[in-house]
Length: 456
Image 1 (tube, rainbow, N blue to C red):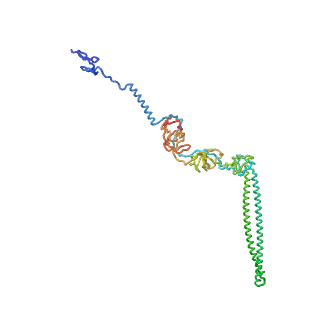
Image 2: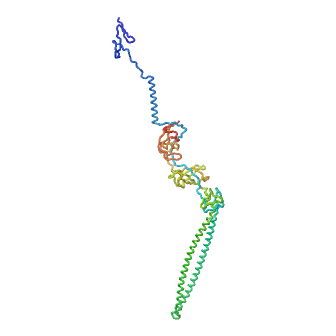
């Protein structure tokens, strides 16, 4: 039998003769003379080893974290965590917007009359004190002025002298008139007699019964009396005009003296200061024995049954405040009262100007001078608008942006808005938010540059 070749575990053939594989000089494999395989073989390594899997997971996590950070920075900016209970959230609404400003008015009497010393003097007597109620004409204090009384006495004496002089002129004029009238009567009587005598003598002269000299003498006497009559009448008229002129002058002088005397009397009477109106003496600056100069203010009387309010307003609104604009008070005695601007004072002092407001109807009964009242002064007519409640956010952003809550209410994002007019309660919204949006209206000072808030 022919023995079978067998392969040893190392790949060499067994038998009578065999050829052993040996490496070549270049290190390459050498084939056996038979069909047997080479001694070296390639060992396959797995692709997903534990080490490679761990490294890949770490790389993916790092890249994911970087991508999330880049994405949140690009889309939402900085995020700030906020306690929900520490912010104020207001809902944007639609309604009538009434532009008004809050001012404080001070109650002043509708009428105040100052007490002044028309003529100076010494305080002799004080009849009333501050706070007393008075009626028109009641004496308040009395002054003494000896110089004024002496001037009054002198004026009175001059007036009496003037009246006596006028009376004398009237008497002289009347006597002169009587004398002239008597002369006129005598002249007229002589003329009548001479005219009769002249007529008779003319007839006789024509008949040559009387001498020419007698006739001419009668004629000359008649002509003389007629001339005398004319001169006497002229003198009468001239004397009448002259006396009338003198009388008119004396009357004018007497009228001036009368006026001066009346003025002096009023000045003396004014030494007793009287209440000019019914009201209350709210100021009295006088002491017994005090010397008060002419024109010095010594007090005032207020009409206490009617008050108005005087308010100071920032000069920013000076172009928008007009006569007739309305205002409303806060509740006074459980009742709000309407007022209207009665007067606008144009002077601006320390950045503010003043207005007087009159009550429409009766003033509150318990109002007192100097009492302060809060007012809402309307600057225009109500107009429908989108409204946002006022808050500290305006000081932080200038009204250019606001944090608006998301639908879930768990966060808020900053977005631009536009605000228009404002009053102490609301802003007028012009754009950026709509009715129903919820906006954080409290201060943003602690949020820094955050663009997104997380409400916890």
